[in-house]
Length: 393
Ligand SMILES: C[S@@+](CC[C@H](N)C(=O)[O-])C[C@H]1O[C@@H](n2cnc3c(N)ncnc32)[C@H](O)[C@@H]1O
Image 1 (cartoon, rainbow, N blue to C red):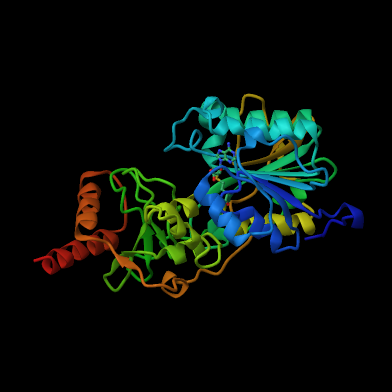
Image 2 (cartoon, rainbow, N blue to C red):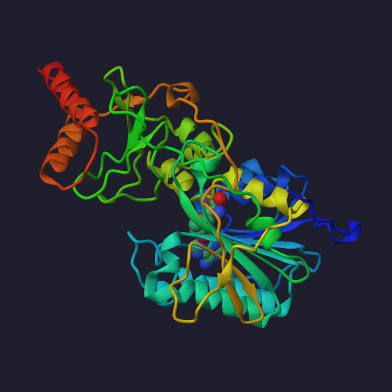
C-alpha cells in the first residue's frame, strides 16, 4: 500500500490520555516513542496501577475538574465510559451521566484544538437511540473543523480475544482515512472450522440461554460485568476434556498488557475480581498500537468502493467524513491478518477448572435455551459435568 508522506515537523510528539483506565493508550503510544504528558482517571484502583506502572506521567482525577489541556498536546485519546452505551449497560445513551462525560472532552477541545483525537467505545453506540452518540461526536468534531473516520475493529485481528470496539480518529490537517481505514484482511478469526473437537473453544459460562460467545482458539470479550452481575473470566473447553478459566495474567496478555500489569491492585486489598474488572474495561493495547503506528506511518486508503451515506441511513460499522459529508467505508473488522494460534500454545499459566456448580448451571441453561452450537461442544460440557459430579461424590 502506498505510504503517505508526513512532513517532519508535523509528526506528533506527545499524547494526553483522558479516562485512562490502566493505561492501554499510554502503552500503545509508548511503543512508537510518543510519551504521555498527562493522564486523567477517577477510579482509585486504576489510579494506583497508573501511578505504580507509569510513575513519571502526571495524573489528574475527575475530567470535570480538568481546566485545560497542556499547550503542547498533539494527540488526545479518550476511551470514554461505556456503561450507559453498552447493550448490557443502562442504555441511556448521551443522557446517562457516565457517557455524557464525552461532552467534557469537547469542552476541552473547544478551548484548545489538538491535531489528533482518538475515541474508543462499544459498537452499541452506533445503534442506541438511532446512533445519538456517534452523531453527536461527528457533529462536534466537524464544528471544530476536524475530518474523521471510524471503524469497528475486532481485537481478534491481533490477539485471541473477540472484542469489537469502535475507534474514531479525527484530525485537523491530516486524513484520518489513511490511518484507520487502510489495511483490510478478509480472513475470519475464531470460526469453528470442524465438526470434530480439535481445538480449544472459549465461551461465556455465565450465559447459555440466548448466547454463549463460542470461538475456536479465542475467548469471547473480557467484560467488566456479566449477566450474573460480576466481572468473571470466560471459560475454555479443551479437547482433552478440561473446562477451565484462564489465569488473570493470561487475561492481561489477551488484552495486550504485560503480565501482572494489574497486580498492584492487590496492594489495596481489593476484591479478587477487581483485576478482572480493570482488564475488562481496558482497550486492547495491540489495536491502539496499530492505530498509533498508522499515525506515524499512514497508508493511502482506496475509497473508490465507498459511497455517500444517506441522512436517514443507519450508522454503518465504518465510515468517514468531514464538513457535513459522510461516506460508508467498505472495510472489514480486521485491519491486519493473523495466523491462528492454538489457545493451548498461547496460554502460559495454569487455568482454573470450572466448578461443578458453574458447569452444571451452564449445562442447564444451554439445554433449556435456544442457542445453536456444535454437538461436540454440548457433549464436552455434558461429559465434564458428569466427571465433576463423580469427583464431588
Ligand atoms: C472504558 S474505561 C477506559 C479504559 C482505558 N482506555 C484503558 O485502557 O484501561 C473508562 C474509564 O473512565 C474512567 N472515568 C469515569 N468517570 C471519569 C471522570 N469523571 N473523570 C476521569 N475518568 C473517569 C473510569 O474510571 C474508567 O477507568
